[in-house]
Image (cartoon, rainbow over all chains, first blue to last red; front, side):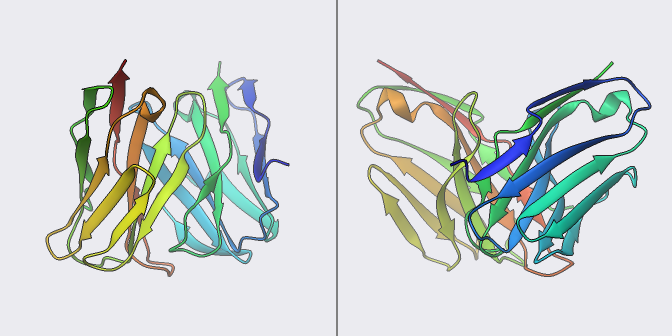
Length: 112
Length: 114
C-alpha cells in the first residue's frame, strides 16, 4: 500500500482551466504539506495543514486553494492556470512538524 | 530572508571513499533540521530529524551532526557505494505554528564512480 498517494501523476491542461490534485495518506499522520518544485529543482513549501487546520501558508497566488476534508486528505485546487504553474507538485505528510516527512511521487503539471 | 545553503552542489566520489557535505542555515529561530535522500525518478526519503544542538545521528554508513549555534549540519557517508548516488537535501524548520517556515536547500548531488 502506498503511504502517500497523489493523483493524477501527470496533468496536461490548457491555460485558464481549473484543476485539482488529490493527496491521501494512510499513515495516520496529523500534518500534511504541499510543495512546488520550481524550475531550479528547489522544493518550496506552499501549504501545511495540521488536523485539517492551516498552519503554514506561504505567499502563493490565491488561485491556489488547499482543501482538507479530513486529516488523511489534502487536495490542491488551482484556478485559472497560468504557464508559470507548470511544475512538479509534491504532497507530504508527517506525524507532527518536527517529524520526518513522507512524500508522494509528485504530480507533473504541464500547462499548454 | 531565510537562506538554507548546501555545499557542494555536486560531488563525484570513488566507490569505497568516504565523503561529507554541509547544510548551512540561520542560527536563530531553530526548531528542527531534516536530511532527505532523493533518488532520480523517486520522491525524497527521510534520513534524519535533528533537533538538539550537538545531535549526532547514524543510519548504517550515513551519519549527521548538528550545530545550531553556528548554523550548520554535516552529513557523512563512509565507504561510498553506487547505491548512495542521489541528491541529499536538508530542510530547516523554524517552528510549529502559523508563523513557522520550512525551507529546503537546493541539495548536494552525489555520484559514486564504480
